[in-house]
Image (cartoon, rainbow, N blue to C red; front, side, top):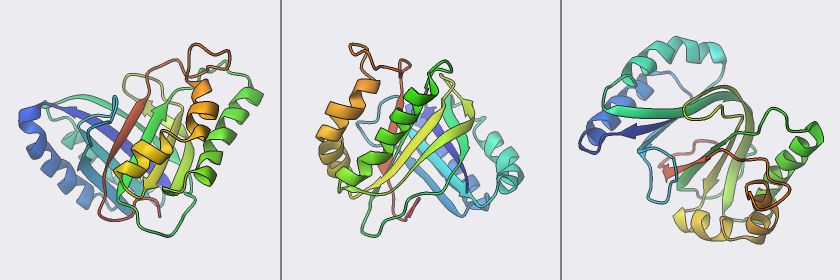
Length: 207
């Protein structure tokens, strides 16, 4: 499937109006799955509105792209981070109420073996964290925003507590994966600021 993620920074006085416009455009986009919500407190560099669209094919996105771009040209939107990418989620049953996305950049000179280990460790996390339902790790085809994003890591969580507690505080996170992001370790490869964004969902995005 072909996915589009946009994280929108929006002037506070215009957020509800912009959210309504973004939701209307998303509903007309023809996306098989769509989400347009205010981001939750705790998001970091994650925008004020999270837009996610999932299409069967890239050509379907091309049909909708001009209207989405026009909607996102609203002057109340002060910054956009985002990516387009392909991939199939690993699906899981069970209740999920929170969608989370992480945009990150791996430098282009990272050795292939090191990149493979990094990706493998990210993919291993759902095996250890039982509050993660469906998930997907993708390489970015086109990035926009403050960094040349290379990867998108998405999950559906049981709830906000399942993200902020069992996920962020799990040993697989702070003792294994965090070293790739920690400038005080020799394994660090993620040096740019990441986009960690999450919001409520009332229907599945990945599952």
